[in-house]
Structure formats: structure tokens, C-alpha cells
Image 1 (cartoon, rainbow, N blue to C red):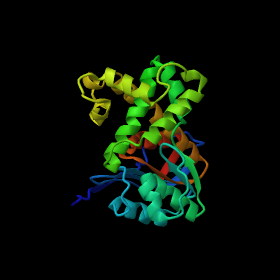
Image 2 (image 1 turned 180 degrees about the vertical axis):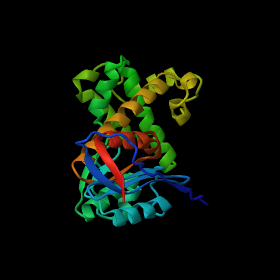
Image 3 (image 1 turned 135 degrees about the horizontal axis):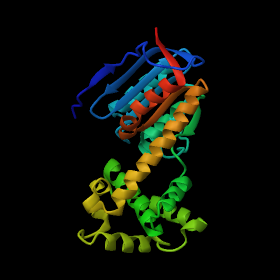
Image 4 (image 1 turned 60 degrees about the vertical axis):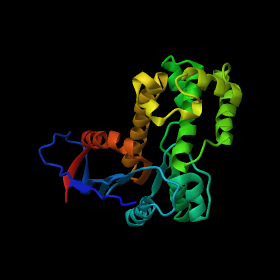
Length: 280
């Protein structure tokens, strides 16, 4: 399929930006945002730290152009720290198998291991995400259904097949082990019952589309949880990136495209408050 390559936007850091007298000086060699049909790249490089923030359209295809682009950018950027989205992927030392099993995130783990680069997760833990949602007064069954449906839909859309029941069972087992989530949905049959009853307009819970996570009217609590959880995740991601930049790391972070779009302007504004920026 033909993929239209996008544009590169170069932004200059002007000298009239205010800063404190004791601010650190970061000489910015380049800052740009690259927009393609499927990916978005935020690139910031200096003599003290660096960030290549790659926003991907999730893929499990080893021949996807994004895989080639990620590897090329990784090699030229020479990172000292890699950040993944979602979780820390198990290591698979075969390039193709890593991508086919865990997508672009599996490929990032492969690259980090190959080049002996520190590898960490940019997301808050599942435990922290669920605790956050409980603090927002969502019901236990709503939180469980959200995470289970989200996983099922991701697998359905990316891998082109129905959900992997084993992966859903792992999530259910995790909930059952937590003392905070005793109650509704203790097994797969419970989940099917709840999910089907919550969306009676559909013949099966397997027909719940991803659009329900973005539609307040149709998605109901799915929309509410997704909206508030994305804001929470973006904030945690931002804090980790800024902290790691302050420590002088060269960061290669790989996430879904929407996260980069949501965070790029905030990253720059927070750097402007922390550092005195100068162009070469």
C-alpha cells in the first residue's frame, strides 16, 4: 500500500525567550517534528542530552516501513536510554520473531539488547493506572471491562484476528490477585456476561468497535475512562522524559502516535522553563 510521506517542520528557539539567570544552557543543534501518514517524530538534540520520540502506528509486520525507519533513526541517534510503551517486552533475540510477537515494541527491546542500551517502560504500571481510576470513582467492573475490551480490540485490529483469550485471562488473573479488585468478573465467563449486557445494541461484545473509546454517547464509561486515563498516562510519560533529559540521557522513546502529538508542545515548553536554550 502506498504511504504518503509527510513534512518536516523546523522550529527555531528565539533569543527573546525569558529565563532565569542561573538557568543551565543547552545548545540545541536541532529540533523538528516530522509528520508521516502513520508516524510522527519529535526530535531534540543537544550537546548535553537528546530525545527522539517516535510515534508509531502499531504494527506486527517486519516489512512495515516504520520498522526500517526506526532502525535507521536508532543507529544514527545513538541512544543511551530506550523507553517502551505499555510494558517491558520479553526479550526475543531473533529480529523477525520479536516484531511478529510483540510488534514495534518487541523490536525496540531487540535493538536495546543488541546495542546494550538501558531499557525501561515509559508508562505507569497497570497497578498505578487501576488505582488512579479507582480514585476517580469508577466501579471495579467498569475498570476491568475497559482493560479487557481494550486488549481484545488491539489484538483484533492489529493482528487481524479475534482476541487471544490467553492474554485476556492473564489480565483477569492479575485483577484477581489484587486485593483492591475482588468482586465482579472473576473469570472469562463473567467478563463475557458483563461486556455483553453493557452494550445490548451489539449482538456480541466481540463487536465492540474501537470507536466506542472515543464516543461519549456510544462508549459510555469506556469513553470516560479512556479520556482521563490518556491524560494521566501522558503526564507520567512527560515527567519521566523530562527527568531523564535532565540527567543527560540520549533518549529513544517509542509509543503510539497520539502520545507524541499530545505531548510534543508540552515537552518543549517545559524545557524552556528549565533551560536557557540557544541555537548553534
